[in-house]
Amino acid sequence: MARVLGLDPGLRRTGWGVIETAGNRLRHVGHGVVATDSGASVPERLCALHEGLVEIVARYEPDEAVVEETFVNRNPDSTLKLGLARGVALLAPALAGLPVHEYAANRIKKALVGAGHADKEQVALMVRHLLPGVGDATADATDALAAAICHAHAAGTRAHWQPAQAASGAAR
Image 1 (cartoon, rainbow, N blue to C red):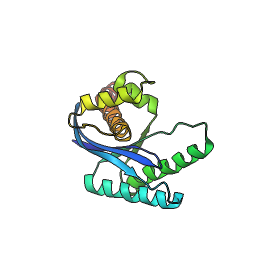
Image 2: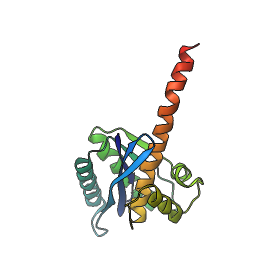
Image 3: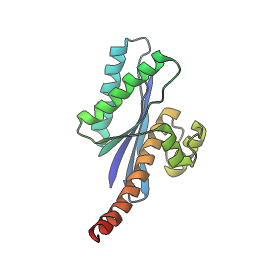
Image 4: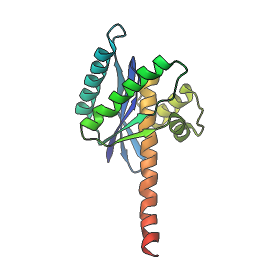
């Protein structure tokens, strides 16, 4: 059984979700949002984000983390702020010794819905279907849970194919 922390980074709100995986079974553990004060300075907001993520890692003790990759916005200032928040989202679990994986938003959507350009409502609906008990989680939290689910599916696929590849390599 593995515990996966999914993160959907943002400077105002960073969504997080924790799932447990056992083979192809998924179980919802927890979810939420780390929100920062928009009136605070960027360094203060980054500190608050870091502190919130450190607390989540300590509380839920995940085995690994997944961070949604950033797409470039048209507004360079927004892109920079998102990049800063993403850096904290990568750093907090890494400092705790966790392996950190990254997936593009389109890959996450395709893994859950079957279409890389699915909208947030479709993703949230599928998250609720796969993880009973999620309830009325925010879009930030369902996006984070979607990242964790995507990684669980990808890890399961890798685990399935690696023994076959090793066996075929040994036969050569």
